[in-house]
Amino acid sequence: MNWQRVWAMIRKDVIEFTKSKYVMSAIIGMPLLFAIIFPLTAIMPIAKIDPAEFESADFGQFINNLFSKAVSNWSSLDPQAQTLVMLAYSMFIVVLMLPIIIPAVTASETVVGEKERKTMEAVLASPMSESEIVLSKIISSFLPSVIGTLIAAIGYIVITDIIVYPFIGQLLFPDLISMVLVFIFSPMVSIISVELMIMISTRVTSVRDAYQLGSLIVLPLIMLVVAEMFGLLFQSTITMIAGIAILAVIIFILFKITANIFDRERALVKMV
Amino acid sequence: MLAVETHQLTKDYETKDTFLRAVNNLNLKIEEAEIYSLLGPNGAGKTTSVRLLTGLLRPSEGGASVLGLDIVKNAQEIRGKVGLLTETPAIYERLTVRQNLEFIARLYNVPKKDIRHRIEEIIDLFDISEKIDLPAGSLSKGMKQKLAIARAMLHDPPVIFLDEPTASLAPESAKIVRDQILKLAKTEKRTFFICTHNLFEAERLSSRIGIINHGSLIAQGTPSELRELKKDETTTLFRFDQWSKEIKDYFETNKLEIVEMDTERKIISVIIPKIEQDTPGIIKELIHQNHSIVEVKHEFPTLEKIYLELVESESVPRENHEEEES
Ligand SMILES: Nc1ncnc2c1ncn2[C@@H]1O[C@H](COP(=O)(O)OP(=O)(O)OP(=O)(O)O)[C@@H](O)[C@H]1O
Ligand SMILES: [Mg+2]
Image 1 (tube, chains in turn orange, brown):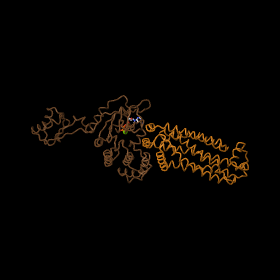
Image 2: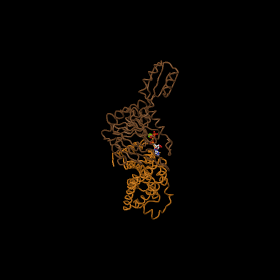
Image 3: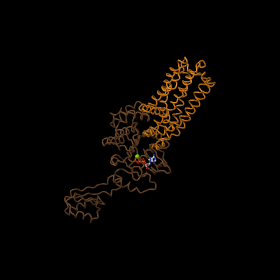
Image 4: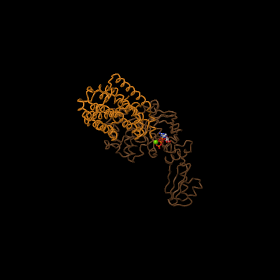
C-alpha cells in the first residue's frame, strides 16, 4: 500500500467535494436540517403540553428497565418527562441515519462521478493498485460522513438538552450511550455503508442507478443502528464489545470483497 | 532494449452474445527514442492498442512488453513508467490547473520537493502558465488538451503514449506540441507512441508509421519507405506555352497514361513508368517537335493518397461487421 498515492486521491476527492454544492448540502445542510427539525417537530410539542393535561401512563416493565439504566432518576420522573426522554433517544436514532445516508451521496459522487466525467481513465492508467484505489475511495467517502454526523449530533444534543433539561433536572446528553453511538458505532456502520455503496458504484454507470441500488442497503443498516441502540441501553459490556468486533469483521471482509471485485478493465470498458 | 514490443497481440471485446476483435495479431517493435505513429480509420483499434500497452486492458491472445516489462505480469510497474494521454482529456474540471497537476505528480510519486518546480516548468512549456490557478473547467478545449498533454509528461516518463494529441489544437499550439515531442525524442531519448489521423503531422514527426485497419497492421515503415510503396504512381506534369492537339497525340502514341489534361491551363499530367530514365528523352523529343515547355515537375504520391488507397483496398466486407458503426 503506497500511502502517498492514497492520500493524493483523498485530497483530490475532498477538494472536489468542497466544490460540489450537492455534496456540501449532504454534509452540512442535511445534518443541520436533521438536528433542528426532529427536536422541534417531535420533542418540542410534547414539552409544550400543559403537565396538568398530561395523562399518566404506564410504560411497562421493558421500557422502565431500559431507561432506568440510561437515566439515573428515571423512576422519579413524571410521565411527561419520561415521554420526552424516550422521544429524545428515539429521534437520536433517526439522526444517526445520516452516517448511512451520506455515503450514498459521497461514494457515488466520487466513483460513478469519475466514470461519468471520464476522469476515471487517468486514475486507472496511474500506478495506483486496485486496493489503493478502493481504500482511498472508501476513506474519502467516509470522511464527509463523519463530519456530517458530528454536525448533526452536536446540533441535536444541544437543542434536545435545552428542551428536556427543565423536565429532568439534568443533562440527558451527552451520555455514555450517545458518545459510543456517535464515536464508535456510527463511524463503523458508516464504513460498511461506504463499502456497500462503492461496491455498487464500481458496477453501475450512472449516479442515478447508484442511488436506486443504494436505497436498498439503507434499511438493513438502519436496523443495525436500532439494534445497537437497544444493546447500549441495556449497557451490557459484552454485547457492546461483541457488536464492535462483529462490525470490524464485516468492515474487513467487505473491503477485501470490494478490492477484489474492482476490476480495472471492467471499470474502463463498461464506462458507457 | 526495445521500448515496445508486441507479438500476436490480440484483443476481443465481449459484447452481448458475440465478441468484437478490436486488435488482431499485432506485431510491433519500437526502438527507444523512436517516434512511432499509428495511423488508421475510426474504429481501427488504435486506442485499444494503447490501452493494452499501458496495462489498462488485458490481451485476449498474444502479448507485449514495454521497456522489457510484461504488460500482464508487470502492469503496475509499466503504468508508473509510462505517460498516457487518453483519448478524452480526463481533466478534473473542478480542480485548478495546478491541483490537477499536483494530484498526478503525487500519484506518480514525483518527489515532494520537485513537484512545484516541475509543474511550473511543464506549464511554461505548453504555454498555459497564466491559467495555473483557474479551474480547469474554465479552460478552452485546446487548453484542456494541452493540460492533458502536460500531465502525461509531468513525471518525465521514458515512454509516452499520446492518443490523438493535436486533434483539437490550433496550428500554433500543435506546433508547440510537435516541437516538444521532437526535442524530447532527440535530446532525452524519450520514446513516443502516437495515435493520429493527421497525416501531415505523422509524416513530419514520425521516425516510423504503422497503418492499422480492422485491428491489423497493413503497412509499416518510415514516411519515405511508405511513399516508395506507390512509387509507380508518381505523375509528371508538363506545362506548355501554347497548347496543340499534337501534344496529346505524342503521349498517346508513346503509350503513356494520361492522368490529367487541361487545355486551358495548357497542362498535361502523365505516368512515366521508368521515370528517371525516360523523362529527359521525352522533354528532348517535345522540344524537338517545337513545343515550348514552361514547366516540368514530378508529383510524388502524398502519404494521404497512399494511406487512403491502403485502407480502401483493405475494406473488403467481413463477417463481423460491427466496427462500421463507429
Ligand atoms: N468498450 C468497448 N466495448 C466494446 N467494443 C469496443 C469498446 N471500445 C472500443 N470498441 C470497439 O473496438 C474497435 C476499436 O476501437 P478503438 O477505440 O480502439 O478504435 P480507434 O482506432 O481508436 O478509433 P478512433 O480513431 O475513432 O479513435 C471499434 O470497433 C470499437 O467499436
Ligand atoms: Mg481512438
